[in-house]
Length: 276
Length: 261
Image (cartoon, rainbow over the protein chains, first blue to last red):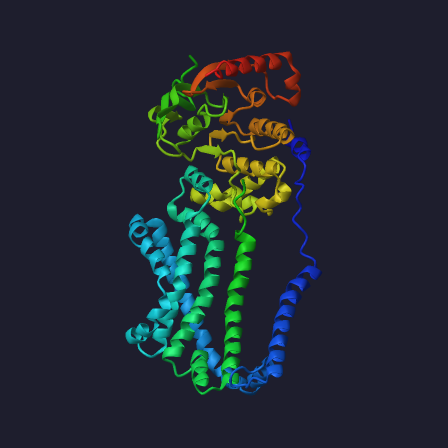
């Protein structure tokens, strides 16, 4: 019996991948939140003008925007160390956090002794320890990096560990039939299926990494956006302080955007449920 | 007593028993099961759900230990999965991020064989099952029947002598299932394998097998054995043959005889 007729008798799948979302839908997805944001700024500006509240207490968005334009080079100068230190703290968190999650996945001892403590540390208000990090790590970048790692590493550990352990048991059984070594199962099955979990943890971690650096700058630094905010607030230079906050938002969006973009690439390939 | 796998048997089960400890006491899932498969033979384990037929297959695959007795493959007791055995599960269990071809080559990678050497064989197998145009597609782009065809190619890619199939078509609709039966019959004419096939479909068992072992439950045991005398190649029309109908009826009675518990 030739195989071709048998094969030809089996119809191709009915579900053709969905067409890309229409451009109108994408435009809406950008226009709606942006419109709402502009509306809020409008209310803010109107409130400031109608009440005549002094700019030292609350400057309007237009005033902040003007300040932003005037002192842009200074803001950028302060934004660079903040962004770089946040990125550094985030990367250290990713590398160390993934390593700890792998240890948790493969070591019963770590799972039993270390994991419950990691969950417990999640609960304590870590910001309370920030001044001590200055005591321990000094006034330089080290203390800010260390604190940034300290508050951003936990989501990476927890989500990576969850991803590595929530693998479809049928896939693991399949690998056993091939007599696969554990490192092969790790590279070919566990790690790829954990990637979407890892990235959702990293998205949380990147924002925490920035917070960590800014808090560090509040306490010690002679530069950086956190330093600028504390310094100008103390001098009641509110427009500059808020311009620095706006700059911080931009830096945060940049880092977050990079991680979210990588996540979308990863999810496109690795984000599907195992095939049943 | 069925031929309990003498010397030269491809698969042999000798007094295999399986007991589970549960909260309400020990459950006897399998009780003293013995049978054998000659090389090249297609044997079906047919029975109602809960009779332990899949457990028996997993024991023979080396994926689960037996409580007592021995499973042997090609004369050697099974203590772990073997690379001369291919397994097809009920779910296709494909890696969703891999292409059709890369899924089929997964065993080659994991067995640390030369991927380049087996690539042509993988492509040829996929072409044989009508997936030649789908090599680069990912599993979510394939239909259920296509995914299971990929899983069958994956089980055959390293050319094992023995194929263990655990209800591979039970998740498919009736029409696709008939097509898959025809495809498997066709595939096996060119790739001679010893096959142990678990199913709860009587017609599927008769259509595919040289011999059907009927299992009963509580405890799981073999209650009847029927040889299937129809010559190969077999086609769908065989189902209209009076001999086929009579054999199906006989097997149904054998299964119903186990149901009164």
